[in-house]
Image (cartoon, rainbow, N blue to C red; front, side, top):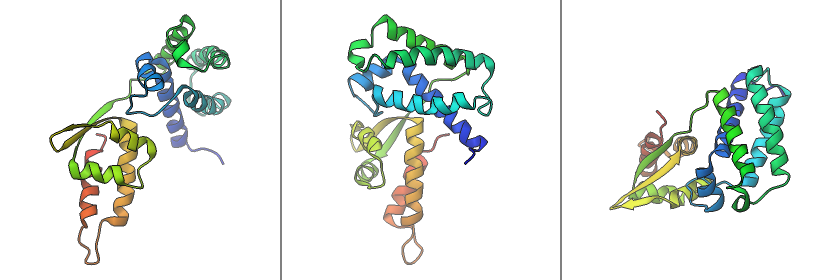
Length: 206
């Protein structure tokens, strides 16, 4: 089935986001090596996401509206990165090597050619009730629950730092659950519905 223009834009956006993480050594040390969160990721997963998207993008670069200028940078990076991941798999060993530094710098050049900007991180304040609800919610994905567990508690409030894409994912999941749980038999908003309405507002990306 042929992808729509919006679907291609989304794939390219996610592809560039993965390239940003490949370019960012601070992220790699915090997530790939120390596993501090809130993101849940590793080098093998980064390679898998990159390579699966790259195949489609290279095959149909014109449909992705990629210019010859951008494609030149991307192809040079791809060749270097592919050679690297075929020989290396432990970031603890390669993170500070000249070879990996070259990869990160080339990734930055690709991002610059696309005019890509660093993803935002949001700080979200949750009440004790909202925090407990989300931690127990069965509709929340594992990566989101791991991010919640890294929240900082101050008095009865919990503060969580999230990449904007994860905040949007949680908001969408809460919105879907709200459609199921929002009304009781008398068409009044249920206690769970009230919590979900508040969460949808708090995880909104403005």
